[in-house]
Image (cartoon, rainbow, N blue to C red; front, side, top):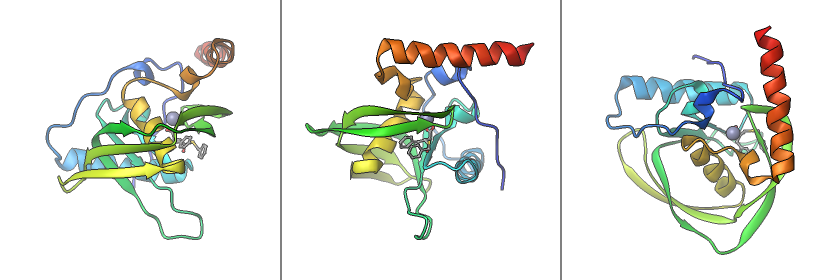
Length: 171
Ligand code: K2U
Ligand code: ZN
């Protein structure tokens, strides 16, 4: 059980593109476990490896309700292969942009292709909150944050707030 610190903007690693995973070795398996431990502790429903400062293409999520058994998903090298035509607006937050929530419009359905921890190739159709989470997490692997979908005014206001906080913390 290892809970790791979650990077907060403006950390530059949150804007970098993560590298594909070639071999699912013990390091990757430990990382997946630490990502899930960290996500549950936050608490959150998703987490991407770059949020822990690890520039590898892996995301985890668990959308099970509080009164349901955990249903962890680990996606290695995930790719969205299809976007539905319909759009949905949902409220999003981000563990790397704490305590802010904004409405974001995204495709309501996606098809995602990934490799699971056992090395099996998986193709999964998703809608609703799972579709949002998959898009939010895969964006993290490409250095894209949900605030990038807001108006320039709102996004710049968020960036300015965290830039100021980072400067104050640096002293
Ligand atoms: O990547 C992250 O920062 C984890 C997010 C993932 C997420 C954000 C918005 C919508 C779906 C997934 C965290 O779980 S933030 C906590 C949260 C949970 C539900 C809705 C909004 C925010
Ligand atoms: Zn996020």
